[in-house]
Length: 478
Image 1 (cartoon, rainbow, N blue to C red):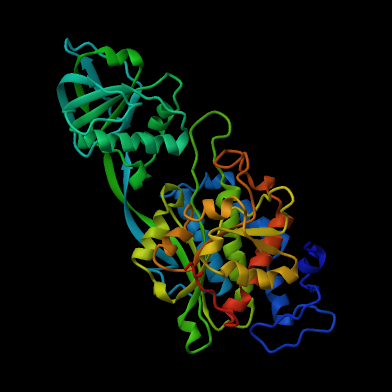
Image 2: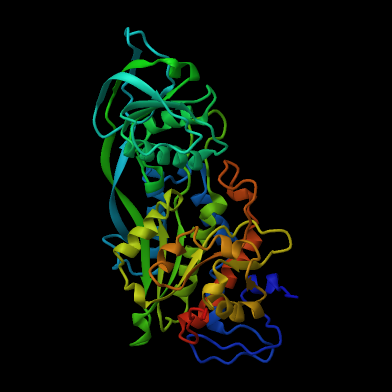
């Protein structure tokens, strides 16, 4: 059973549990009472409930409107993180400029020009609007071929426009991905456009309006291959149509990972790095009555808060032997896009990143799991064991979750690095609660004392690696 000393830890005086603890960064003796060394307390004192609250209450505020990738609000959040790195004394020299690792990304906006949809006699056919447009104007006169979208789609023979009812239990981004996959299959079979039958209360209708309001970044799993026109079921009875669809509006915008460097002191170990990361983006906002802002407090403003808090803590310590990288990513919610881009154009050699500590959802613990952290992919390396050995005497346990450790290993930005051979895991101290990806994921629903303890635990747990006392290894599965 783990014992906790929250008041002592938050005050920077940590009582240990009957075992010696090495000091990192300075040769300081641990007192006979088992208190943390002075250098450790300097770092811990940077991680307070007040500072955690100040950081996350801004990142998850309504003013940042859910931090959708490519949005003005996301860029404000990125500049805020950069300012925190600068204030901590981190170096921005690894970035393209001003702490930003920039990728120019195509952004797509659905045109507001109305779609012309009529029958063979030029009589208008009812429609709900345009969900997706093609790269060119589409003019089509001819037959509509019915397709059963609930069954396996044919691989050929669908020349022209096809129509069918959408049958799905999916919601939100998963439904968008499903429709996008359909359009890719239909295009390969020869289709030029899809008349997609939906009910008059379908969320896709609202989505189509959002797509006209703001440009969006299309991920591979959410990229529409052909125009998609939303129609009521009655419109699918028209055998022959006249159709004119305007072209999508495409522009390029800078996507920003934010990266800061704390260089190590050892001539050799400083060539190696420990990477602390989290994703800065969330789902943005929807123009609906009431609360339409997906604040993303736990997912993942909590992780970003941890990254900037850790930067503050390490920057106050004597410099570690290994170099430390602190990074936030764009586009995680769209398919790990920012981290994928980084590993393709890395600012630090990937084979010299000794560990990636990626932080996801640490603000709302499961029942009975306060002050505990679970690591994904536990069986892939001994990183969790190494960090737990250091953090457990301080009252924070890092453990293997019986369900999520294996299930979620490939679901966050750590996976982009793991695919390149880096020891990379996500660390969570939360749950897939009912507010996950909902408008109620607000910062005032987080358990700030728990979250603060978790960040302190991650700090203490990573000290042996940062100061060259330990090196994680991949697990031998033979």
